[in-house]
Amino acid sequence: MKSIKNHLSLVIALLSILFSVQTFIIIERSIDSYKENLATSYSVVVVSNKRLDNKIIIDSNKIVSEISALTPDNVIERLNTGMTKKNMELLKLTLPKFYKIKLTHYPTPKEIESLTENLLKNKSITKVENFSHNHDTTYKLLLLFKTVISVFAVSMFVVTILLIFKELRIWQFKHNERMSIMGLFGAPTWLRSAVLFRLSIVDALIASALAFGLFSYISSSTWVLQQFDYIGIKIMIFDPLYDFLLLLGVSVFLSIMLASMIVLGHKEEV
Amino acid sequence: MDKVIIADNLSLAYSNNETIINKVNFSINSGSFIFITGASGSGKSTLLKSMYGALKPKEGSLVVGGVELRGVSGGKLNFLRKHIGIVFQDYKLVKEWTIEKNIMLPLIINGYEKTVTQNQVDSLLKHVRLKHQAGKYPLELSGGEQQRVAMARALSHNPILILADEPTGNLDDYSSQLIWNLLEGANSQLKTTVIVVTHHIPESMNVDYKHYHIEYGSIHEVN
Picture: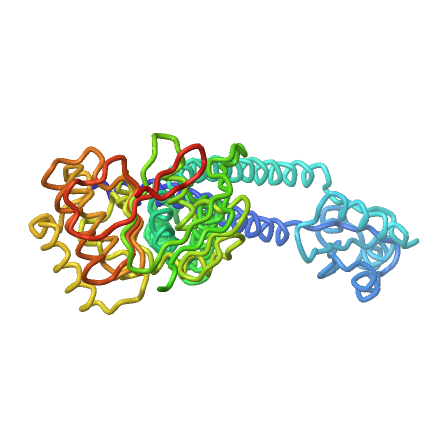
């Protein structure tokens, strides 16, 4: 029972760190996926006097992925109040050309501003509608969401690190006596600290295994998947290989660091 | 005769720099039985600590088992300690280990094989009359029993030197007698050098011994 309690304190601290790390990863993935969704639905409309050369526009603006002409047929149809076909053709020619520009990714407000300026340098372009007001609001909301989650994850990380340091003091007190006694009988440092490293690595493995179980469950939960589906986000909540290896690495690194600090801080009793 | 300990102009002090032992000279022959006495605070335990390298000489030199302890490296000190058995006044047993594992400690450090280790521990447990307590933890034993475990641990790896700091202080007669018998046995049968710091030398000792007394930072032999 005592032994379980000893393990539990570090395992819980490590588990909460792993939880905050994985939460941060999920949020990052969600935001990236959401940005992709926004990028596909977002476009800039350009009005030009002359026909534009798509290649020139794409080459001079790296952010532009696709440019397509908007047909004025709908507008002309609405204006058609008994005009002859010839007049209609004439009107078509005199009307400005409309283009829809698709972007490679969801742009920052600065990127939009720069794109608008760049496009307006073209003498034949008379207007660029970038819907910046709508775009800015969405983008700022996205950033706010990311910042709030990041602050939450970082504060959780900091609190847990403080918890681990408290645990470190307890471990130092607990293991110092044994390490001193072993030292008095000539045990080299590696042998004195072997128990400590073994304990911390075991705790790291337990914490990683629990995190694996927890996130595997979450990622297969239909309720969670439904929530992501509602907001149109399709991401891998937990990659059983890549994410697990990352969490295992974080947890082993932290626990070895903890054990090393105890070994380095150990002073022989006089 | 080989000298197991040679002190030359040895001075010892703690971090507050107050000199406890002041420029003493003495040597101890291999296989001898030594008692060191002195009033409380005279520096007898300090001298013993310096012999296992827990306190480095402030001045002069102290050679134990051929190892100069002034400025000794960690590796050399570990090597020396592997060949010393220490009995502490406060036992210094690992509380979370069983009696058996505590006795095994020097054998594990010295890299003995598992079967040899187990046989040696079984034999020592019989000698200290604690065979039936092997699986217990130190805090489940009385003070006398804990000191017998500490004694068995000090003897387990057949050291060249045993350093005992008031090994029978506050012990009952039975435990005290058992400990003296073990120390005498190690000295007479295994030719182990034994150095005991104590307030009282037992009246009936079955081995020849030398008696040193510490007073005002100096050490002298008592005839």
